[in-house]
Image (tube, rainbow, N blue to C red; front, side, top):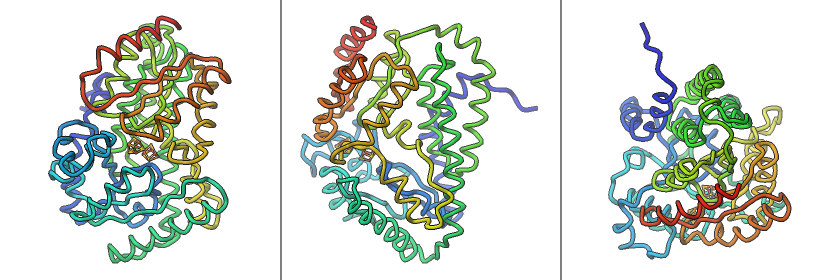
Length: 384
Ligand code: SF4
Ligand code: SF4
């Protein structure tokens, strides 16, 4: 008889998925299945799925290998880049180790220059991402999508058919839809779970290599959350509703999410790349040109590397209204110039146009600033 797990246990399992799926990656390789590693939300993973490759996000989020990375990279670089490079160079990340190919992209300057060094010990394909989301930029990007398909074909010696791409689009859309339904649960007030638990579910699910299974697990989890919603809403009660924006969150920077909820708030949405940004907007399944459909969906991702970054503001605007947010906490990483510069405009947008509170916290992968973060975040929550 199958034992019914408690909801907190399910959340913890998702929280541990990154670590626990190392073995699954090894088994995958033993079965001869290709593994493609990525560092960015702009990579159209459907093309890898269409050749039955598994895809894994490689962004590292711990300070463990930063001293090693600083032997080659400037210490002023963002911790995400240093940590990712350090784990790769030290061969300490099993996902990196098992990845046959890394699909990289020209997003921020630090990352693209780091890839030049990484290329010395790993096969890398760099997608040229334009910095402007206009017509010319789109033409370039669509060509890059086709170029990635061609690279995958030549590197792995396979043929990627349009039918296979269509199937992958449907599967990934289904998974996106299932994730979006989990995000949507946070529109309830009180919320039926804590935002940090939702984060664990979404982030953890990205380490399930079978996309169909992942969608199923997300739907099952949603069902469980709904079944227990009334009890959990009574326990959680109404709390100040926070949207987290900014740089990708995970690992060491989860401290910000924990502090927001430990000091009395609830995170109703993560606008960043480890949150809704990676899931919202589906690929148009009716477009007969699969490359155009893919290019369109990925091209409209809002990231501070774009100028102007119209789609980040647009998404934030929608989320603030739909999730009835009281404040935005904009978490940026030290050395991330684009997100740090953008805090001025995001802050002005939140306070002047949306009439809600805004707090910018700049952090790194250490624990040294937890006291200071707690003081600042607590002051925000008490004000709401
Ligand atoms: S924040 Fe920008 S550069 Fe970083 S993963 Fe997201 S889209 Fe890519
Ligand atoms: S957080 Fe900023 S600096 Fe770091 S990799 Fe992402 S865009 Fe680049």
